[in-house]
Image 1 (tube, rainbow, N blue to C red):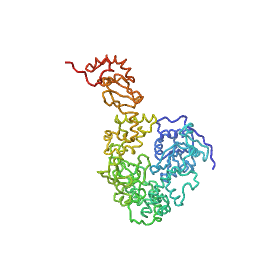
Image 2 (tube, rainbow, N blue to C red):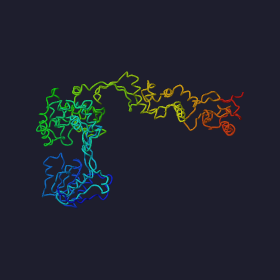
Image 3 (tube, rainbow, N blue to C red):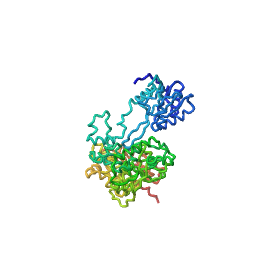
Image 4 (tube, rainbow, N blue to C red):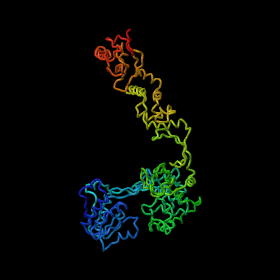
Amino acid sequence: GRSFPVDLRHLPRPLRKGVRFDAALADLVVQAAGETEGGILVFLPGEGEIRRVEGQLKGRLPAGCEVRPLYGALPFAQQRAAIAPTDTARKVVLATSIAETSLTIEDIRVVVDGGKARRARFDPSSGMSRLVTEPVTRAEATQRAGRAGRVAEGTCYRLWTKGEEGALRAYPPAEIEAADLAGLALELALWGAQPGDLAFLTPPAPGSYAEAQSLLRMLGALDRENRITPHGKALAALPLHPRLAHMLAMAGPDAAPLAALLAERDPLPRGAPVDLTLRLAAVRDPKQFAGRSPHQPSRPVIERIRAEAKRLAKSARRASQGAMSDAAAAGLAYPDRVGLRRKGDAPRYVLSGGKGAILPEEDPMAGTRLIVATDLDGDRREARIRQAIRIEEAELRALFADQIGWQDICEWDRRERRVTTRQQERFGALALDDRVWKDPPPDAVAQAMLDGVRDLGMSWTDAARRFVARVELLREAGEDLPDMSEPALLDTLEDWLLPYLTGVKTAQDWKRFDILPALRARLDWDQIQRLDAKAPAHFTSPLGRDIPIDYSGEHPEISLRLQEMFGQTTHPTVGRTPLRVTLLSPAGRPVQTTMDLPGFWASSYADVRKDMRGRYPKHPWPEDPTVADPTLRVKRRRD
């Protein structure tokens, strides 16, 4: 239990941007080897980093140094060689966190800490665990440094500065915060307990626990009230994850090798094809597989799987459904991970649980239509498939006949910018058969088009904008009228727009659609009367024409030809509010904007008349416009 002092050495300055982790760590190992004596233990997050750093160190270490990797997938003999003391060489052990705690490597005097850790995290949104690489915590860094002081005084080199150490978290997350909780949820259901009934040091996260219960309901282990079923009790009696226990309970002893295989790490080396049948062949007949496959399995892993399969076969009952293929058995364990290949050249799949997944393009299974993905990396956007097995559609239909059925799909397609209508035979998120729905109900199309409106935004006509501006003007004055701001309209589409969307299916239909009748229908008769009285839609010109009033600016405004206002001796108003009048030339260009028409006639008109007579000689420009007749015509030609 004794520990010796350890000299901590940090980087003098942070690593420059663009410096590769493996290169920087290899440089630090070379520095440590030159400045110290004794064995060196280097902490890295995983096998890939160990292999890269091993390559970086070739030919750079002092004479007599021997590099030895240490990680869980390494053959047992090589793990023993990394741990065992040696008098013939100075060991440089490249290890994962396997060497972080109780393991003692006797001749280690120096630790080089890369400052990264790889953890398994369960993602409730995907229902999958994934490995993430994160900075170590201060507690882990302290534990690692202690490896240098187990048998004598030592030295620890850290690949970070003293200042960066303050930003590290104090402790790693508790396992219950990152683990798949399906086993825990099944055990608590067996006891008839809820998480709140137990004094957890760290209670399970509600979202993760609910996801675990959802999986158990899907497997038939819990009922709708999350009470354990007889099938759930049978699963709880098996020493397996509930997925694999369900498979073994349904498929019988013949599925024991598959259950043991899926519970263990991959026996084949990295780079092997994803096909699960290759792993099963290695388990069932190791000698024959070794003679014909270029991907040699790990013997210790195969032996553990075979021993576990024998034990599981003894505890499994004979399947009531008879013999079952490996693919069907895998489907029982992973009903949410049946994958259907998407259209296109890339081997992308949609999983029955709704997530996306992708196979390596060079993999022999890349063209397979239906698979069961038994191992994924858990990426939230598109998981990479690490193990899968081909399943025939007939097997899928026989296995999940009660969960496959036809659905009418009427939805807005953002890519095609239209409502699409399909009839699909679906298993979860998979469309096993897809046909055009030729006569969908109009109300279903209209309902789907509401999503199109939210996607495209409001389609405004000038008249609709003016109407909304009038309503908003009176609302600001305290009138009891509906909110017609664009956000409010989009939030209440079902209330006011849905009955008017008949026949609207595409973005072009929506662009041509006039929303004014639907907007007017939001007001009752009394509200319309008050609106027309206090904020009329039009000003009647001296010629009797209705000129639309624009209420969107600071002042209500009209625009019309100057000659049309001849004879108007008072300024136009809405109630007591003067209109802003823009007078136009015969060509429709603004000549004058005024809120005092009599004042304009008496002052500026003379200058406008002088300028306009030369430009538009065919049009009347009387000296006294207050007594002239309004007109839109040119002057009569004299004979």
